[in-house]
Length: 107
Image 1 (spheres, rainbow, N blue to C red):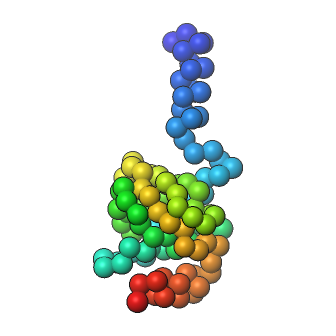
Image 2: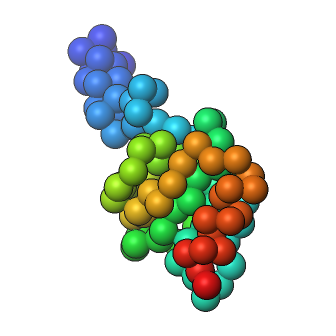
């Protein structure tokens, strides 16, 4: 592979992957049928997300993206190799606070 082709390959890959400055990573630890909210154990605490479309994650799936700020986001389900759309309801929560928020949103 020529040096120019290699540089283009790395540049293209950098555009497709989330930047490390804005990408959090976490694992879905709680998601039950009948509720569009789920809990993610992330880098800086627990996150409560509302599923809005795309890939519907399962417990145990690893997610990456900007879910450590409020609002509607497109994040990446690493386990399913697919994008999902979410609303970040809350983040940087303790485990107890995340569970409390989850039940508040689902009941």
